[in-house]
Image (cartoon, rainbow, N blue to C red; front, side, top):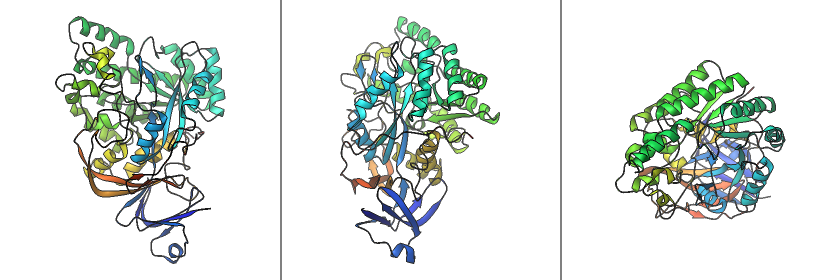
Length: 466
């Protein structure tokens, strides 16, 4: 059984910062001991990793990715192989992707299709949520079976009529089922019926450029849907997790629900924290690179999101990684913004961007680890196996250089997409070495991982609920 000692670094978890050495044995964290103590000095090891002047942090948990996702007549550009390799480069060692039920088909059929896509192809560990596109008596019963299989969260959409959309009655039924089986309902909260009216009107008036994608998906329609989702969950007695929260009014709805003691949680994404409608309005067709839903908002919404993360009104930062190449994919929407595939690349840069937020004073180091590692692991039933550095946890460990600088660029990233949403942005901090279950997958800036190392991880139910 191989033994690795990571010595000399500052170990940062959601709860502690300690100068400690870490002993890894058999793919797990075996022990921690203060650097220089007799206990630490007594450890023998096959490999020693010098983390002097570095942070030693848990591998990131990205709880919202879409590898190989079909959308708008095309597919997300990252496969499970390329996407999880890029995740590893960025210090993320677990992803939770979305298996999709097709209308008229069973949950099982959709889930099995995603198992087949991922099995043997992933560089890091993975789990699945289930998208419910067709709520009916049969699929409601299937939810119970999936929970027992470790698929413990179910995503519903108030947007995309004719594709994923569920009306309030279907949403309520799914929430009631989740209230009984311990599942967590995830909600894409935008009023898709109203948005479609505004899309139709914009196109009829000749407003076809990418910037209008943001204009028609109004802040008020995100807030209204968030409010409605909260009230439906309240009636059902179910917990609710609102994905990709982008605007101040939606944060206010989540905060109000939490102040009432309701089990309502929120997630935001780096694109809402660092980008804005200024990007959607870039000249020519460049704004298409930034089309995602919920959309980018005016810059003034960012402070509400940062405040929500500091105040625990928002608990998680995920990427909603769903990349489409500019050439040949985003370009499908030239002359009609509604045909631009919705989604952006991001799985590789989340940990670095959030460290930049530490440097900029938006969040503390421990909150960085909390929102990127520990909270997503707890939210989706992976903790303490994932999301922390503690005896018994999987040895998903990142040695992180907080002083290195890097320039984000499509020239150097590892995602399978032809542009970077953060092209030319300088960030402070860089992943140096990454371990996944005790195996080094990035070694001082060299990729040493392999497709098939990553394994499926069944999840327990949400650990925020008593």
